[in-house]
Length: 175
Image (cartoon, rainbow, N blue to C red; front, side, top):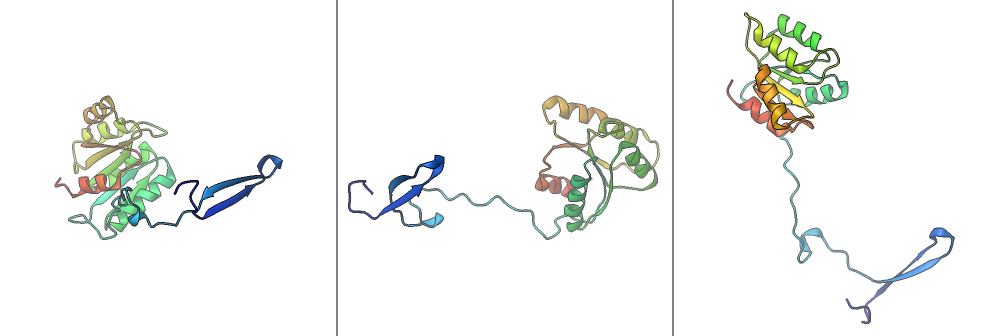
C-alpha cells in the first residue's frame, strides 16, 4: 500500500523518553504464514519420535558431570526403551564398567577427576569382560579432538549439544 493512497491507517502513540510521539503506518491485514506471497514456509525441524527406534533395548552407561544434562540424556534414552545408568565421575565410570556389562558407554570428555580419554583407555585395556561401544561427547569437535578420541579407544565422537537423532542412529547401528 502506498503512503498516499486512501488505505486504512494505523496510528500509534508512544510515550518513551517522556514526550508523546505519534507514528503513522499503513494498516495491514494479518496473514497466515502459508498464504504469504513470496514467503517461503520453512517446516519445523524433525522431532525425535516418541516411539522407540532401536532394534533392541541396550544397557547404556552415561558418564556426565553435569547432573541436569545426565538426567536429560537418561530420560530421553529410557523413553527409547533402553536401560540407563548415569554416573558423574571417571572413577565411578570405571567402577561401573568393572561391575556391570554395558552395550554402550556415552562419556563426556571433561570430567572433574579425570578425562574421558583415560576412561576409554582403561576400559579398552581390560583383558576380560565385554567390549562396549564407547561414544565420546564433548563441546570440542574439531578434527584433532576427534582424532584424540579415536586414539583413546572411542568408537564415535558427538559434539554437544548432543544431537539426539545422531545418537539414536549410532545406537541403531550393529555393534
